[in-house]
Image 1: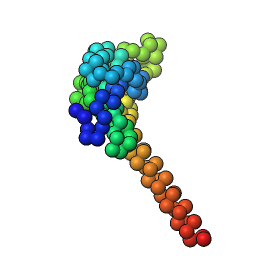
Image 2: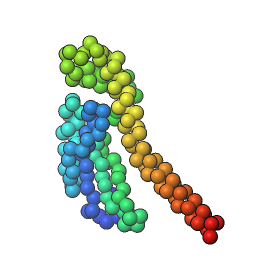
Image 3: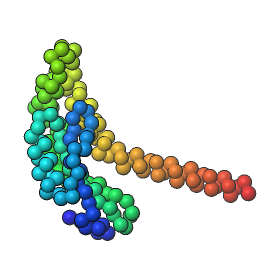
Image 4: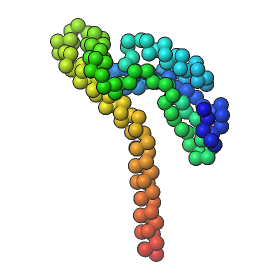
Length: 152
């Protein structure tokens, strides 16, 4: 699916995995199907809580890159309690034996909740962050222009 005004074939597909509290890019592809197949394989790995494929294309009309998530394995925001418990159990199993007493199952569940918050922010945070920066720069520019016009 290409958006109106975008060049077809100009996109890339990044495969990202969520592990240890952050998203990490593990591959970039020119072919959509290859990227999704790779993501599905990685999703079977219990080390990763989630896997996603992000499409990035250049929009000629707006002269900017447009990103879109085109594939995502099990969401970190899944509200089913058994899914959260499984994530907590996976984290609990991955930590070293020495740290198990310190961390405990409750702390592992807190890690899952923190990961949910980080994912929620990362999905909307970039757009919001860039919008705020744009408005701030625009406001400062208009303020400087007003100041210059009133001083001279």
